[in-house]
Every structure is written in C-alpha cells, then in structure tokens.
Amino acid sequence: MKKIIVACGGGIATSQTVAVKLENLLKEKGLGHKASIEAININSIPTYIKSSDIYVSITQEPEGKYDIPVFSGIPFLTGIGVEEELEKIIDIVNT
Amino acid sequence: MNLLDLFDEQLVHFDCEAASSEELLEKMANRLEKKNLVKDSYKRAIIEREHKFPTGLPTKVIKIALPHTDVEHVHQSCISIAKLKEPVQFREMGNNNSEVAVNLVFMLALNGSQDHLKVIQKLISLFSQEEVMQDLQKASNKNELLDTVLKAIQAMGDNMITKN
Image 1 (cartoon, rainbow over the protein chains, first blue to last red):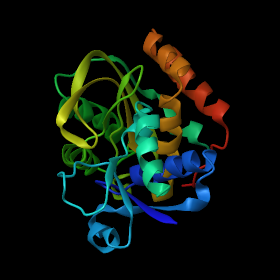
Image 2: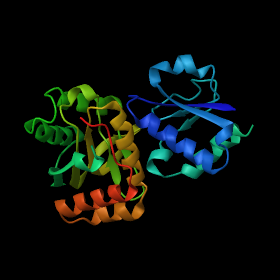
Image 3: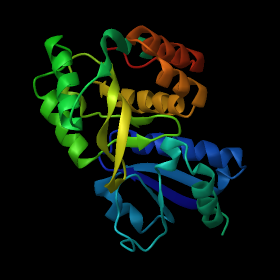
Image 4: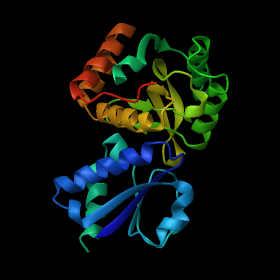
C-alpha cells in the first residue's frame, strides 16, 4: 500500500478536491486498495513526507527538494494531461 | 442549503472590464461588501491570497480563475461570477512563473470550511464538461451565463451544503 499526500498552498479545499479526484481515478483503474490518499496542509509536509511515497503538489515546489517523487495536481483540476500524470503515479503505485 | 442558492444574478458581472486581476477582484468584492455579504476585511484578504496562492486554471475551453479566501471574512456564503470583455492576466495555480489570460472568474465567499470542498469539487467538474464550458463562452448576456451554470450544477445532483 502506497501513501500519497496531496497539498495545496492555502490548504482550504483544493488539495481535498484533487485527493478525491485522484482516489476515484485509482478506484476506476482497480487500484483503490493499493494506495491511501491524504490531503494535508502544506505546513505539515515535513511531518508527512517521511512516511509517504508520493507527493502530489498544487503549489510551486523547487525540483529535488524532497526525497520522494513529486507530481503536479493541476491536471486533475484543469482536465488537461490527466492520463499522463495519472500513469506516472500508477507506475509508482504498482512498484 | 442548496449550492444553487449561492448564486445571484446581481452578483454576476457580464462583459466586465478590468485592467488587472487586482482591479477585478476589488470590483467583485466591492459588490459583495455593498450587499453586506462579506466583511470589510474580505477584499484585502482575497487579493492577498490570490497573490500568495494564485488560482488561474487553464482549462480546455475557457481560462478560469477561482479566487477564494478564509471563512472568517464572510457574513453570508455566495458566489460571484465575472465574464470578462477582454481577458485579464492571473497567475497560474501551482506555477508561480506562468500567467493565464482569464476569461471567466468564479469568486467564492464561503463561511463554512466544508463548503469550500464541495463547491470547488462541483466547479471543477463543471470545468471538465466541455459542452457546458462552450455554452458559457457563447453566453451573450448575464442570464444566459447564469442559467447555464445553474442547469449544469443541477444536472450533477447532490448539491446540499452546510446551512448557514
């Protein structure tokens, strides 16, 4: 079971929106049982990052800042490039 | 209450003109403030938050912005819409170096934190419906614009949000 965290800048609701969307997409692919997804406040990242496998970001993050793979949450909001970003996440979920 | 009740024709700006995103947000916030739907702190808060955490979203058909801020600045939940005569530059969500020429703005003034989740989810699914977005782009007046939004939200069902 892979742990995915989603965080947005303000932490009001955008991260939850992406988390729910991603969860539904993984379920559709029959991978619901292989990942747990949690929307978190950006300030809690240092606490969560060590115990997580994938970070889906909705804010600007400098490359290489974290030790785990970071993906963009924006496609899940705009609908553009969803499959591509999802495939990359699935590749890791399946490892 | 129902999500549909958050919209009001008087909060729709059609063929709106603004030189900058800040000017537009100010204009939209002023109307909410005049109707006593938000506190006088709302305007500053929404502009500052947009600056810190931009909300421009380049969706397939129309470029959108989805400004929102904390619940403490809101008296009564509502959503204001602006369709712009000429696009206004917003910075893109999650990409500080990129700008989006926005045509349509949904400005949220919500006083329940769970409401933000529900409302943003609904609006994001609205943005993914290309036909609806094309209708919004074609809308030639305020009523057509609002009708299209309301019908599309109604068609999705499950629209109850926290009562306030």
